[in-house]
Length: 373
Image (cartoon, rainbow, N blue to C red; front, side):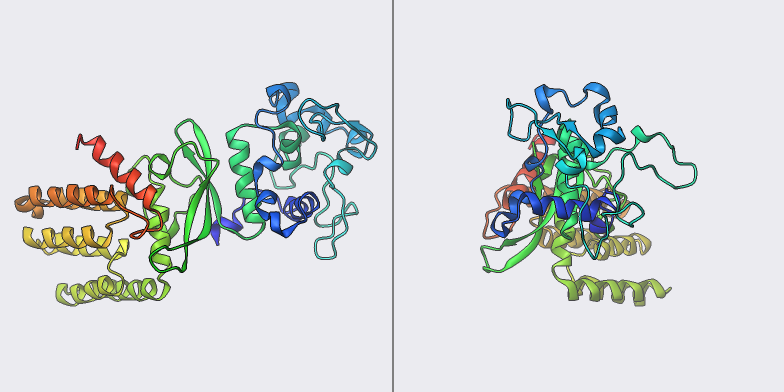
């Protein structure tokens, strides 16, 4: 929900984007093209000049006369190398910035979703410099590189209610987008995330660019490339009832002061959803509080290896944390071996074991490589 409602686009542009993209790609069979940022943005712009003339602060975008027309376009509508067209109705005409929509009135100045020329924010303290406010149609006209494309992928997906967010890769920006994928083991559609505009996979992808992590998982992991936590959290959310039961049991656990009662509730949380990150963390915190013997830490390590078998990054992070606990010192080597064996298994995952088999293999292999295994 947050990924949809925190779509990085102004209120007025959201219905405009829906209207404009439908005018460009009205065929429902080509919805993929409608939601493809490359359908609207030339990488680098015309002659790789997207930064010229002020970039998105190009004065031509903020000139009332050009906004209403006539204007000669920067990006040729007929494709690369073609002559730029003259639009008698200006940028308004080319990008359908004026339209009739009973639900999102836009056509007249003063309408709640009207798009004017160089509209500025009315928020207290906001700058009134027109050229500081860049709109998506300007990016469509000027072009851009990975950041513009990644943000537009998120805009387009959010426009139709699909969770999507920008995330970093080495020297690059990509987009993580929710999708339903067929599980080859069961034949059922399963919710997960894919990467759009990728140059690397999940193993080399960073955390969400927004403040919210799915379930809050991974926020405190400390991993540079923590994006795989999204796949882990979504797999837990796919088991909605189990996730809720585990959550409720943890609330009960937090209400107890006595170790025995707290332990029973924490164990109930783990039983409800054995792979639940919060429940596993609660168990680890409890073992530390109780000065549990090393064998209990080893048992928890084996539980994590079994339940997170195809989520190598959280598996690695949790087992590394457990191995460092003072109470686990007597079985530290055994816990380390559990981790290595689990990552080795994950590095060979196939489609019958997980819907994210390649991502699982890549992440596990990277983690093993870092330690020279």
